[in-house]
Image 1 (tube, rainbow, N blue to C red):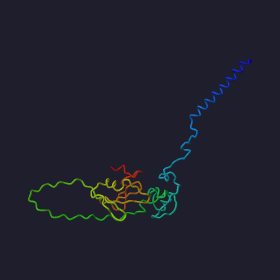
Image 2 (image 1 turned 30 degrees about the vertical axis):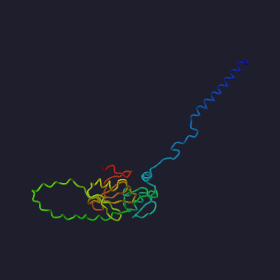
Image 3 (image 1 turned 90 degrees about the horizontal axis):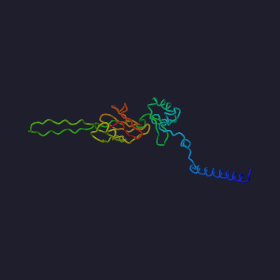
Image 4 (image 1 turned 180 degrees about the vertical axis):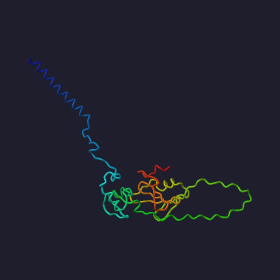
Length: 222
């Protein structure tokens, strides 16, 4: 092979090597030198702690019976110790961040009903010599709304609808498992427990009145 041809081949090979190096540098320059691992590799699965008991029936929680801590137990075990069905227990997080199961309002039983409101005796009406005029009928009235502070009943309003009373008492307030806050509307006792407000006509048997969302609000009440 002539010497000139060998020289050309060598030059061509050198140029090909240089081009390959340049291309590799350009491609690698557009990448992140320290790519972060995907979220799943960093933290794994994230589970809302409030839902954990429903995800694993064998998980143990702090169990309370008659307001007393009796040890760690599964939800079913804690319900059995309380003599209740599992759906009769409040499950959530206590002040320490631990999962807790306790009967509804077991830490704060209902207080005595508020005293009967005293009505001022009407004064004798003055004698009117004018012809009697028809008495206007008042608009539909609400009822007295009271809050129980732990030692006494305090009036929020003397005339309020039921929904407005619930909002005034409990909007923006949440309680932990086993805890409760009490109020009164008319002849009914109101009770805030985890994720709901209950109502009782006899201060003993309670039924759900309104569900509470995770923001401690009542979207179903207008």
